[in-house]
Image (cartoon, rainbow, N blue to C red; front, side):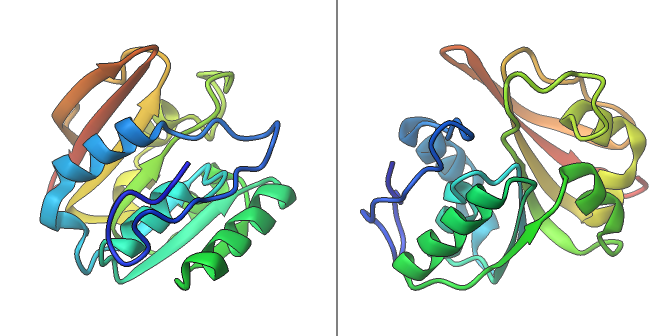
Length: 184
């Protein structure tokens, strides 16, 4: 696994063995190609961060900041090591995704990534579909902010809070881009 582009482009990243299933380089490249200039200067949150690859890619491409969230101590240690190796700065928080979203200040982030474990139960409070339905995720994004999620099945449909911008299948995984609606 490597950083695709930007200041740390080409750098190999470590992955916490047995606890993370990182997004494939090809898929991550497609995600960032789709985001284009939305990454430059963005305030980013990387939920279920694992190796930190999504947030590190964003920082490498010019994001202003990134908050990495993972509840596993080994993953948090790997993210910190990957940040040092890439000569990038970010904040790593050892926390459950649902608690992190609930505790985020309103309109804090421009871009939020979620790449949860495929085995995460859809009823779990940290599952992206639950976070989207509950409204807390929308409140932590600025109006027009973007939420990118990778899931093993078709992602949730658009709603009054979310405009579905793009949805594409890559092998077994689906990647969806949502924009937070202004009135959410």
